[in-house]
Length: 261
Image (cartoon, rainbow, N blue to C red):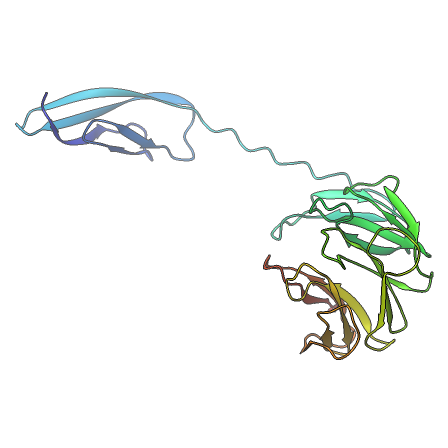
């Protein structure tokens, strides 16, 4: 058997196609995106060391790729509606449902430890939680704190499940289970006029609190009172505060929402 010295395509077929061939005669064809379903013959010449050559015809069947289906946008719900997206670049929502009532306080957390956040609402002193991103009846409800308290959600004990705390004046009353009753931990931090928020600010898998005062964020890495562990200036006084792990490094950082006219 003669050893091939080189191989080449001598008749490629439709314009816009590209092909390569190995010394053994293996042909790889790249078809343009505009190609339609067809079968074509490609002539391949293999050259040997004694300057002889063989030409063979390779039949190539090409099937045009089907256009990908565009997912239907969920029907827009009525009532207290949530429009959610799992993609930073998405221009449309991917999940839509109604839950709770207008005027309820919104809560977001992983209530069942499945590593997926879902929603809850607080109405008066009653908390209503859903374990899936859907409307319908709450999966769990209980009373905690007073109607005038502000509720916050977080994983206060590092067990992988979020629970509820309430803020009353400058006092935080923390509960480590999704139930009513007495607080498991309470302490004073910040001022009553501050806006409180929660997050894991040091990547230790335990959420703690911070407060927003003017354009300052005063963050505490322990569930305790005292001086802030971190103070940073960001945004403007009057901005609405959001906290999240925006880049997946396990550390919660602040964002602000500001209406610009």
